[in-house]
Structures are given as structure tokens and as C-alpha cells.
Amino acid sequence: MTLRRTLLATGIALAAALGTPLAGAQTKPIHLIVPYAAGGPLDVTARALAEQVKGSLGTVIIENKPGAGGNIGMDLVARSAPDGQTIGVAAVATMAINPWLYSRMPYDAAKDFSPITQMVRVPNVLVMNADTASRLHINSLADLIAYARKNPGKLNYGSGGNGSAGHLAGEMFKQQAGLFAVHIPFNGGNPAQLALLSGQVDFNIDNLATAAPNIKSGKLKALAVTTAERSKLLPGVPAMAETLKGFQIDTWWGLVAPAGTPADVIA
Image (cartoon, rainbow, N blue to C red; front, side, top):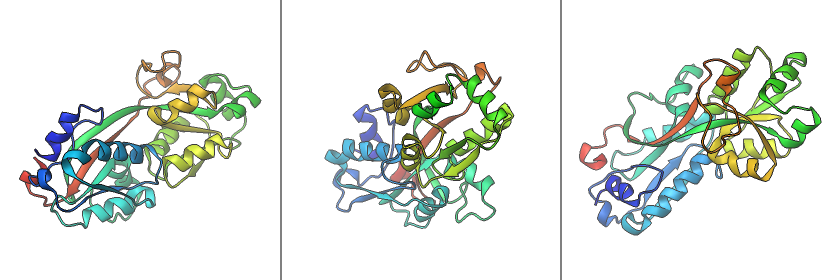
């Protein structure tokens, strides 16, 4: 059974994935490169994936290679042998945003990879540190916008790095809302979330899967989701588009192999 078919058979929400005709009898471990820090959403997803397929595919080694907005890890994938032993977790940032953000890229997102599949697509949510929101009397997105407009530069927001989906969403929010807040990039989604929880930053635009436990516990206050409509997971939280017409951005992650990986390896 190929890697892709194996993962389809698991039925997990990570969707389909890797492929290699040697999958049923792997003698070497598969290296799955995560271009962000351990503990973040991509890392958690990759580890869940590795756990699900270990019975049929053998050892899948997760390697976290954060830095440069994900470019360091993805460059490692691009330079690896196209033999199915090394694959990478790609994100909208590493494949679609960074080429426009960085003047010099270590890889060509369009040419240096063989796409395997999209794993997940998740909504983002604008969340504030609950204590900060209470102290500033911010109970809604409109409150946040009003405060930021009256106090330009006093608020800051964190993201998983320059060019990350959270960074792009934050800049879109600032532009459409007509406000200024200081961007503080971190080396992955988990450090950014920890900074928010500790009060080092005031708000983040994070993916809902990662933020949900802290929203439920009351540590974070959800002000809006970034999908066009409200999420069924947070029906009481408005969509940003209800305040900022046309605002919509979500996050996707996928799997890629180095360019030149044979089609029968990916199939």
C-alpha cells in the first residue's frame, strides 16, 4: 500500500498524503520536515500524521527546521534527494506569501517541489489576551478597531514569523480597518501563542484549531473569525466580514517532495 493510500485509509482529518511504492516495506525512516518550531499547529499535525501511519509505513521522523519564515526548512526539502525519503509540510506562507515578501528566496516555490496533497484547510480567528481585553474594555472587533485608531502603535500583535499566514492576515486587518499596530514575528506559531498568553503581545490572528483550547478555557478572547461566514465551531463569534466587508483569509497546509521525485513514488 502506498503512503497516500495508507493515509487515505486512516480516515483522519489530515486528508491524503505521501506516496512511495516502497511504503509497505520501508527499511529507512521517512524524514518529515516541519519548517516551523515544535509545538505549533504544523508540528502537531505532522506528529499526528506520523503516529497514524507508523504501523504500515514504519518510522516517520519529524524534523523541525524553523527560521526565515519557513524558508530554511523548505530549502532543506528542495535540496534533498528525490527518493521519497524526505518530504516537507508546506504552508500558504512558504509557498504563496514568502516569494512576494523576500527579495531573495533560497528556493523556487513553483519549480523546486513535487506537490503531493493538501492536508488541511482551517479558519483563522482574531484572539486577544483575555486580561488585556478586559483591562482595555475591548469586547468586540469594533472595540478593538476603535481603540487602535485612537491609540496608534500602542497595540501589538504576534505571528509565527514574517510572511506567515498570521502576519498576512494581520497586515490585511490593519489596512482594511485603517489602524496601526506593531507586528512582532516569532519563530513559529507556538512561540507566538505563548507570547499572547503571557501578555507580551496584545492580539494574534491564529488558526482556530490551535487557539480553540485557550478560547474555551477563557485565557483568550475570540473577537472574529477570518472566514467569509461564522464558523460552526464558534457560532457566537462574528466573521470579520461582518465589520470589514470582503475580509476573508484562511490557512492551508500540504505535503511536498523535492522536484524530480518520480510520479510512481508520489502516486
